[in-house]
Length: 288
Image 1 (tube, one colour):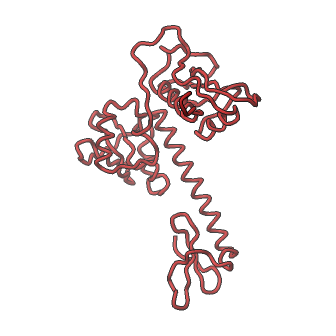
Image 2 (cartoon, one colour):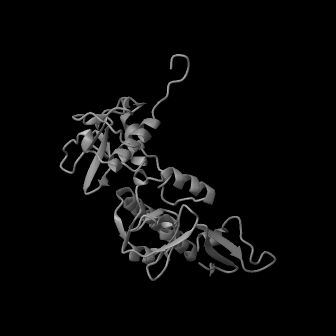
Image 3 (cartoon, helix red, strand yellow):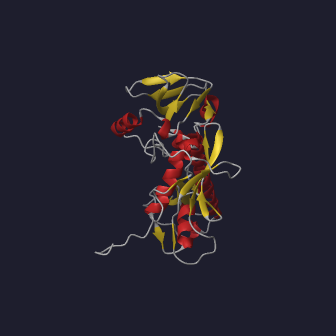
Protein backbone atom coordinates (compact mmCIF):
# COMPACT_ATOMS: atom_id res chain seq x y z
CA UNK A 1 0.00 0.00 0.00
CA UNK A 2 1.31 3.46 -0.93
CA UNK A 3 1.52 6.66 1.06
CA UNK A 4 -1.60 8.82 1.39
CA UNK A 5 -1.91 12.45 2.48
CA UNK A 6 -2.85 12.99 6.13
CA UNK A 7 -3.11 16.72 6.56
CA UNK A 8 -0.67 19.46 5.62
CA UNK A 9 2.90 18.25 5.40
CA UNK A 10 2.38 14.57 6.25
CA UNK A 11 1.64 11.22 4.64
CA UNK A 12 0.76 7.93 6.28
CA UNK A 13 1.04 4.29 5.25
CA UNK A 14 0.94 0.81 6.73
CA UNK A 15 4.50 -0.41 7.31
CA UNK A 16 4.83 -3.93 8.72
CA UNK A 17 1.28 -3.70 10.07
CA UNK A 18 1.73 -0.33 11.80
CA UNK A 19 0.55 3.12 10.78
CA UNK A 20 3.68 5.13 9.99
CA UNK A 21 4.00 8.80 9.06
CA UNK A 22 6.52 10.76 7.06
CA UNK A 23 7.01 14.44 6.38
CA UNK A 24 6.46 15.82 2.92
CA UNK A 25 8.16 19.18 3.41
CA UNK A 26 11.27 20.71 4.86
CA UNK A 27 14.61 19.06 5.48
CA UNK A 28 12.98 15.87 6.75
CA UNK A 29 10.84 15.39 3.64
CA UNK A 30 10.48 11.69 2.84
CA UNK A 31 11.89 10.57 6.18
CA UNK A 32 9.76 8.23 8.30
CA UNK A 33 8.92 9.60 11.75
CA UNK A 34 9.48 7.59 14.92
CA UNK A 35 6.04 8.54 16.25
CA UNK A 36 2.84 10.05 14.90
CA UNK A 37 2.36 13.78 15.43
CA UNK A 38 -0.89 14.69 17.16
CA UNK A 39 -2.41 16.10 13.98
CA UNK A 40 -1.67 12.83 12.18
CA UNK A 41 -2.95 10.62 15.02
CA UNK A 42 -6.34 12.29 14.85
CA UNK A 43 -6.59 12.41 11.07
CA UNK A 44 -9.35 10.32 9.36
CA UNK A 45 -6.83 8.62 7.06
CA UNK A 46 -4.90 7.38 10.09
CA UNK A 47 -8.07 5.96 11.61
CA UNK A 48 -8.94 4.29 8.31
CA UNK A 49 -5.51 2.66 8.14
CA UNK A 50 -5.77 1.44 11.74
CA UNK A 51 -9.09 -0.21 11.01
CA UNK A 52 -7.65 -1.72 7.83
CA UNK A 53 -4.65 -3.07 9.79
CA UNK A 54 -7.05 -4.70 12.27
CA UNK A 55 -8.96 -6.30 9.41
CA UNK A 56 -5.70 -7.61 7.90
CA UNK A 57 -4.76 -9.19 11.24
CA UNK A 58 -8.14 -10.92 11.50
CA UNK A 59 -7.91 -12.07 7.89
CA UNK A 60 -4.42 -13.51 8.41
CA UNK A 61 -5.58 -15.32 11.56
CA UNK A 62 -8.59 -16.72 9.68
CA UNK A 63 -6.34 -18.03 6.89
CA UNK A 64 -4.05 -19.73 9.39
CA UNK A 65 -7.01 -21.29 11.19
CA UNK A 66 -8.45 -22.67 7.93
CA UNK A 67 -5.12 -24.10 6.78
CA UNK A 68 -4.55 -25.59 10.24
CA UNK A 69 -7.98 -27.26 10.02
CA UNK A 70 -7.11 -28.73 6.61
CA UNK A 71 -3.82 -30.01 7.96
CA UNK A 72 -5.08 -31.46 11.24
CA UNK A 73 -7.91 -33.24 9.42
CA UNK A 74 -5.75 -34.20 6.39
CA UNK A 75 -8.72 -33.26 4.20
CA UNK A 76 -8.40 -33.24 0.39
CA UNK A 77 -8.03 -29.64 -0.79
CA UNK A 78 -8.80 -28.73 -4.43
CA UNK A 79 -5.63 -27.68 -6.22
CA UNK A 80 -7.61 -25.01 -8.02
CA UNK A 81 -8.57 -23.48 -4.70
CA UNK A 82 -4.94 -23.22 -3.61
CA UNK A 83 -4.09 -21.57 -6.93
CA UNK A 84 -6.93 -19.10 -6.51
CA UNK A 85 -5.99 -17.95 -2.99
CA UNK A 86 -2.20 -18.04 -3.48
CA UNK A 87 -1.86 -14.40 -4.69
CA UNK A 88 -3.31 -13.24 -1.35
CA UNK A 89 -0.30 -12.61 0.92
CA UNK A 90 -2.13 -13.86 4.03
CA UNK A 91 -3.07 -17.17 2.38
CA UNK A 92 0.42 -17.52 0.93
CA UNK A 93 2.03 -16.96 4.34
CA UNK A 94 -0.16 -19.72 5.82
CA UNK A 95 0.41 -22.18 2.95
CA UNK A 96 4.01 -21.62 1.88
CA UNK A 97 6.44 -24.43 2.80
CA UNK A 98 3.75 -26.78 4.11
CA UNK A 99 4.33 -30.39 3.12
CA UNK A 100 1.91 -31.27 0.34
CA UNK A 101 1.07 -34.76 -0.91
CA UNK A 102 -0.36 -35.35 -4.39
CA UNK A 103 -1.48 -38.54 -6.13
CA UNK A 104 1.83 -40.33 -6.61
CA UNK A 105 4.53 -41.46 -4.18
CA UNK A 106 6.95 -38.93 -5.65
CA UNK A 107 4.46 -36.07 -5.37
CA UNK A 108 5.56 -35.00 -1.88
CA UNK A 109 7.37 -31.82 -0.98
CA UNK A 110 7.35 -28.32 0.46
CA UNK A 111 4.87 -26.04 -1.29
CA UNK A 112 6.67 -23.13 -2.94
CA UNK A 113 4.26 -21.82 -5.57
CA UNK A 114 0.78 -22.21 -7.04
CA UNK A 115 0.20 -20.94 -10.56
CA UNK A 116 -3.00 -19.54 -12.02
CA UNK A 117 -3.53 -22.67 -14.16
CA UNK A 118 -3.62 -24.93 -11.07
CA UNK A 119 -0.04 -26.22 -11.07
CA UNK A 120 1.72 -26.58 -7.72
CA UNK A 121 5.49 -26.36 -7.40
CA UNK A 122 7.08 -28.35 -4.60
CA UNK A 123 10.64 -28.92 -3.38
CA UNK A 124 11.13 -32.61 -2.61
CA UNK A 125 13.60 -34.30 -0.25
CA UNK A 126 16.19 -34.44 -3.05
CA UNK A 127 16.06 -30.67 -3.38
CA UNK A 128 14.44 -30.95 -6.79
CA UNK A 129 11.50 -28.84 -7.95
CA UNK A 130 8.47 -31.04 -8.63
CA UNK A 131 5.48 -29.74 -10.58
CA UNK A 132 2.14 -31.41 -9.92
CA UNK A 133 -1.44 -30.66 -10.91
CA UNK A 134 -3.77 -33.30 -9.39
CA UNK A 135 -7.41 -32.45 -8.75
CA UNK A 136 -6.79 -32.41 -4.99
CA UNK A 137 -3.87 -32.57 -2.58
CA UNK A 138 -3.58 -33.12 1.15
CA UNK A 139 -1.65 -31.15 3.74
CA UNK A 140 -1.13 -34.18 5.99
CA UNK A 141 -1.00 -34.19 9.76
CA UNK A 142 2.65 -34.84 10.70
CA UNK A 143 1.84 -38.09 12.51
CA UNK A 144 0.86 -39.49 9.10
CA UNK A 145 4.17 -38.55 7.44
CA UNK A 146 6.47 -41.56 7.22
CA UNK A 147 9.49 -39.36 6.42
CA UNK A 148 8.82 -36.83 9.18
CA UNK A 149 12.36 -36.85 10.64
CA UNK A 150 13.91 -36.52 7.17
CA UNK A 151 11.54 -33.66 6.40
CA UNK A 152 12.51 -31.91 9.64
CA UNK A 153 16.20 -32.23 8.88
CA UNK A 154 15.77 -31.01 5.31
CA UNK A 155 13.60 -28.11 6.48
CA UNK A 156 16.39 -27.04 8.83
CA UNK A 157 18.87 -27.10 5.93
CA UNK A 158 16.53 -24.99 3.81
CA UNK A 159 15.71 -22.60 6.65
CA UNK A 160 12.01 -23.38 6.27
CA UNK A 161 9.69 -21.48 8.61
CA UNK A 162 6.08 -22.62 8.33
CA UNK A 163 3.23 -20.21 8.93
CA UNK A 164 1.13 -23.10 10.24
CA UNK A 165 2.82 -25.54 12.60
CA UNK A 166 3.03 -28.83 10.71
CA UNK A 167 6.34 -30.69 10.65
CA UNK A 168 7.46 -29.32 14.02
CA UNK A 169 4.07 -29.87 15.62
CA UNK A 170 4.31 -32.03 18.75
CA UNK A 171 3.27 -35.55 17.77
CA UNK A 172 2.47 -38.62 19.84
CA UNK A 173 2.37 -42.02 18.21
CA UNK A 174 -0.11 -44.52 19.52
CA UNK A 175 1.54 -47.58 21.09
CA UNK A 176 1.28 -50.79 19.13
CA UNK A 177 -0.48 -52.43 22.05
CA UNK A 178 -3.15 -50.77 24.20
CA UNK A 179 -5.58 -52.27 26.69
CA UNK A 180 -8.55 -53.58 24.76
CA UNK A 181 -11.26 -52.17 27.03
CA UNK A 182 -9.47 -49.11 28.38
CA UNK A 183 -11.01 -45.70 27.62
CA UNK A 184 -8.56 -43.34 29.35
CA UNK A 185 -4.91 -42.32 29.34
CA UNK A 186 -3.44 -40.83 32.53
CA UNK A 187 0.04 -39.87 31.33
CA UNK A 188 -0.66 -36.18 31.93
CA UNK A 189 -3.06 -36.41 34.88
CA UNK A 190 -2.25 -34.81 38.22
CA UNK A 191 -0.94 -31.45 37.01
CA UNK A 192 -1.84 -29.06 39.85
CA UNK A 193 -3.11 -25.51 39.27
CA UNK A 194 -3.91 -22.80 41.86
CA UNK A 195 -7.45 -22.53 40.52
CA UNK A 196 -9.83 -24.23 38.16
CA UNK A 197 -10.30 -20.86 36.47
CA UNK A 198 -6.57 -20.69 35.68
CA UNK A 199 -6.62 -24.19 34.20
CA UNK A 200 -9.68 -23.37 32.09
CA UNK A 201 -8.07 -20.11 30.95
CA UNK A 202 -4.97 -22.01 29.85
CA UNK A 203 -7.11 -24.41 27.82
CA UNK A 204 -8.88 -21.50 26.11
CA UNK A 205 -5.59 -19.70 25.42
CA UNK A 206 -4.28 -22.86 23.74
CA UNK A 207 -7.28 -22.79 21.40
CA UNK A 208 -9.35 -25.50 23.05
CA UNK A 209 -12.98 -25.40 24.13
CA UNK A 210 -14.10 -25.71 27.74
CA UNK A 211 -17.36 -27.60 28.12
CA UNK A 212 -18.63 -28.68 31.50
CA UNK A 213 -15.72 -30.12 33.41
CA UNK A 214 -13.60 -30.83 30.32
CA UNK A 215 -11.17 -29.13 27.98
CA UNK A 216 -11.95 -30.47 24.53
CA UNK A 217 -10.95 -30.22 20.90
CA UNK A 218 -12.43 -31.66 17.71
CA UNK A 219 -10.46 -33.75 15.26
CA UNK A 220 -11.48 -35.35 12.01
CA UNK A 221 -9.69 -38.69 12.05
CA UNK A 222 -10.27 -40.60 8.83
CA UNK A 223 -13.97 -40.76 8.11
CA UNK A 224 -15.24 -39.62 11.49
CA UNK A 225 -15.01 -36.73 13.93
CA UNK A 226 -13.54 -37.48 17.35
CA UNK A 227 -13.44 -35.28 20.44
CA UNK A 228 -10.46 -35.72 22.78
CA UNK A 229 -11.32 -34.45 26.27
CA UNK A 230 -9.28 -33.80 29.43
CA UNK A 231 -10.99 -33.48 32.81
CA UNK A 232 -10.17 -30.09 34.41
CA UNK A 233 -12.64 -29.97 37.32
CA UNK A 234 -16.19 -28.96 38.13
CA UNK A 235 -17.23 -25.75 36.35
CA UNK A 236 -17.88 -23.50 39.37
CA UNK A 237 -15.24 -24.86 41.72
CA UNK A 238 -13.22 -21.94 43.14
CA UNK A 239 -10.40 -23.91 44.75
CA UNK A 240 -7.27 -25.46 43.35
CA UNK A 241 -7.60 -27.95 40.51
CA UNK A 242 -5.61 -30.49 38.56
CA UNK A 243 -5.63 -32.16 35.18
CA UNK A 244 -7.44 -35.46 34.97
CA UNK A 245 -7.47 -38.34 32.54
CA UNK A 246 -7.66 -37.98 28.77
CA UNK A 247 -10.46 -39.73 26.92
CA UNK A 248 -11.87 -39.71 23.41
CA UNK A 249 -15.56 -39.44 22.49
CA UNK A 250 -17.55 -39.70 19.28
CA UNK A 251 -20.04 -37.07 18.15
CA UNK A 252 -22.78 -38.80 20.18
CA UNK A 253 -20.74 -38.51 23.37
CA UNK A 254 -19.84 -42.20 23.54
CA UNK A 255 -16.44 -42.92 25.08
CA UNK A 256 -14.17 -44.74 22.64
CA UNK A 257 -11.97 -47.59 23.69
CA UNK A 258 -8.28 -46.96 23.04
CA UNK A 259 -8.12 -49.45 20.14
CA UNK A 260 -10.86 -47.38 18.42
CA UNK A 261 -8.83 -44.15 18.53
CA UNK A 262 -7.08 -43.33 15.25
CA UNK A 263 -3.52 -41.94 14.94
CA UNK A 264 -4.47 -38.27 14.43
CA UNK A 265 -7.04 -38.19 17.24
CA UNK A 266 -4.52 -39.94 19.51
CA UNK A 267 -1.76 -37.46 18.70
CA UNK A 268 -3.95 -34.36 19.01
CA UNK A 269 -5.50 -35.58 22.27
CA UNK A 270 -2.10 -36.28 23.81
CA UNK A 271 -0.82 -32.95 22.49
CA UNK A 272 -3.66 -31.11 24.24
CA UNK A 273 -3.17 -33.02 27.48
CA UNK A 274 0.60 -32.43 27.43
CA UNK A 275 0.19 -28.70 26.79
CA UNK A 276 -2.26 -28.34 29.68
CA UNK A 277 0.00 -30.33 31.99
CA UNK A 278 3.01 -28.18 31.06
CA UNK A 279 1.39 -25.17 32.75
CA UNK A 280 1.13 -26.89 36.14
CA UNK A 281 2.56 -25.50 39.37
CA UNK A 282 6.00 -27.01 39.84
CA UNK A 283 7.11 -27.30 43.46
CA UNK A 284 10.71 -26.28 44.01
CA UNK A 285 13.12 -26.96 46.84
CA UNK A 286 14.22 -30.04 48.72
CA UNK A 287 10.64 -31.15 49.39
CA UNK A 288 9.61 -30.98 45.72
